[in-house]
Amino acid sequence: MISAIGLIILPLLNSAGATSDLSTLGKPDVTISPISGPPGTPITITVSNIPDISKESYPYPDLYIYLPFSDSFGTTPQSQCGGQDCFPIYTHYDALNHDFADRTVTFTLFSTSNPNPVYLNGLENSVCDVVVNGKTVERYSTLCNAKDQPTGIYNIRFGWGEENAPQINDITQTIQFTVTPGSPPPPLQVADIGNPIIQAYQNGQISQSEFYSKLSALGWNQDEIRQAMAVIGKLPHQMGAPVPDEMQQIQQGVQKAAEQTSQPTEQTTQPVIPQTNPVTIQTQPSSQIQTGSSQALNNGMWTMVLVASCLAATAMGAGLFVIKSTRKITN
Image (cartoon, rainbow, N blue to C red; front, side, top):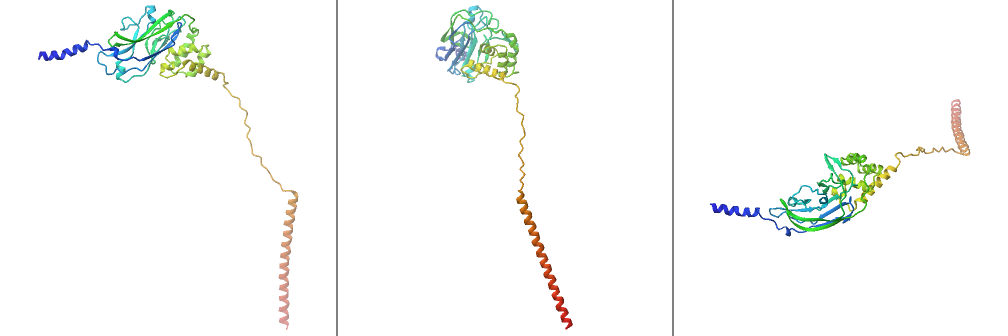
């Protein structure tokens, strides 16, 4: 009996201490845009062709991204990656739910010219926050516009890690990003004035065209409006829309808002004069009237003549009858 129990427990202990062969899980495709830029540069990373790991046994693997940008300031969010700034972007749980969609990671490099954080739903949001498919996974509101990102080459890494021990990992690829010196995007001089507009758009109280129009009226340019949209997660890729050129869409929105603003609110219309169909009164020429009258008169005269003739004939017939009758009696 004891030996039988041992035979059952021994495989369980071996599986609990086992590790997955992470090198066999496959290598997804990764693209980054841009590949260099000064402090304050928005970065977009797309991970595609994610393999199916739903059939992997325990310990379950997850796909992690390792971002090195906060290491320069000694500020690393709490994680299980051995002091590195990392978080999973694709998990075994996602695979079980058949979630193999591309992952889009967005954030902005630290810069003193970045806009101030915005409070939404009790949380402080900044353009430096790391967002994956529209969901914020790391927040950097206190560091976002406190310092400039130091220049240099930064290695962004991707790799498989165990769910409960991501420090045990297999790095599948490394992508370099170069932080260059230069002037970052201009600061939002009217950020405090624009915050109510941003919050109203975030809460659905104003339309997108009103959002563009109101910020443009305050003097915001396209880059500043893009940063504002990034803060509240309203960029097309943050909302899951496959838009290749966000700046083009924002430019079109600003232009459309400007055109709507420039159009007059009241249109003058010409008075409408009702048209009436002219009534034509036809008159007969006097000659036709005279001819008609003459014809009527002649017809009347002929009628009278015929009547008189009939009466005369009747009278004559009666006279002859009287004469004949008298003569007969006399004889």
